[in-house]
Image (cartoon, rainbow, N blue to C red; front, side, top):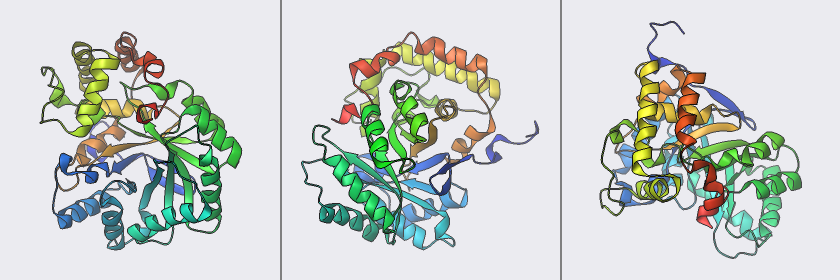
Length: 346
């Protein structure tokens, strides 16, 4: 890229996910699960989703429990000129004790198909709450059968830890599981401890969320006072990540040191935001496929800023500056304080 090429037109990076070539930034639709993030008219949501597609952000992450996300995605894709170019990743989540018979598993998948108005789920991500119940292996074998029958193109996991991810990949065989969606950020570095090795062993890519800590890893929080955890002004995501920052990772003063460091890195590269640097740091790990950035679709969006992630590269100096802050935090010890990936939900 020449020095006079604007950062915002840098081409999107992509990676291979099973049979799909997909962008390395996905649009997460979990904020459609509750009005706590705000709400917008349905036509406006569909229009903004179509705009994401036009700019190359053609992968969307949703779930069975994210409100109307699957329905709105299906409507949007049906109205696009090339629906086959858009990837829909959704989840079937088993939170309660369940006997995963073939009928129950197939019904869960069929509901996804109906809501998304499609004959095949592009990426079906599976979550199982209770590890002591080995029914997740049975359920995954049924999902594998449904994949063979053409109802699922690719299979992934959601919030499984390193031990169970390794177990599942070994049980199902090479290439069956293509991804695991887990939390990963400059604050939450747990995937570096075990999960990274499992991913490289089985050629599994992480789809990461929480990379911007609910928006706290952003310029708007630089030099700001510590927010009230119980303030009604915070979104559910912000309350979750602020709690982690203050009670597990470190304190607000140290978090400000991290923001100052990220701002300095952004300044060295020009026109690069704190969020860009935080996202680039995650994407630079070889076991990461994509970062899923939550969008308040129809209310606010950061597509132009997100595209700048692909216009610069972190240097050794940049990474050393980041490590100097992280080494003084409790981030490396989160895996013992909280547990492995997904433990916070169990």
